Length: 247
Ligand SMILES: [Zn+2]
Image (cartoon, rainbow, N blue to C red; front, side, top):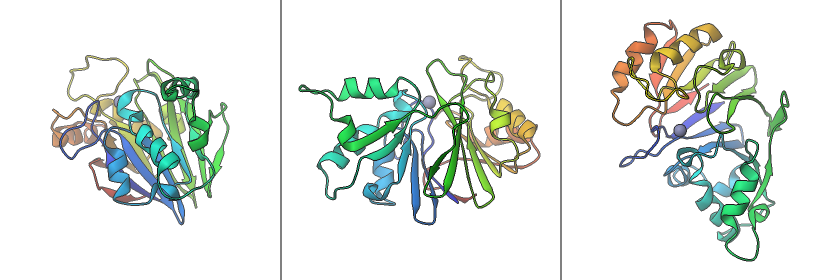
């Protein structure tokens, strides 16, 4: 299984650096996880979106869902035709997307997407990758994600405070992709993690590798790595566009 980072900025994009977006692939299977601002263009550098097998959007904050809309237009009006693309979203997202996309005459959401919300403990198979989900600690419904195939596993925190059960969802995973919006002791918003908190969760989960993501663009990545590494003994790295990792 491979992880491609399309974008990893927390909250807002900067030049050449989209917000959250990741492509997970295994064999011919391709799953786009989070569609932050700028990630659709980054995705086009890698694949034809027609070849996606599913899209997972962790939550409906714009730094995670904004580029669903260019994908929607691509699927409706671009070249190539295929059945609606599976779209895995948290509760309430389908209604919000439908309302936004109703440009007069009703919503055409389901012409492009087949939306669904996973039930608690449900396992959704996408082309041989088994996806499990857990609730995040965030102000809107938010899905944390665990992907497994061939004995390898990747867990993704989405946006979260320390109040979720991420350590359980990520237990024993090869890689934990965890948000680290803040650094040091400065934590102005409770529903996010510091790099130290991400490291502590990685340590409790017993993962091999921690990839920090969703750093505020003003942070120093090396400082974030040092803070996480002080409490977690495995590999620590910071996500950045075009980073490719074998899980
Ligand atoms: Zn975010």
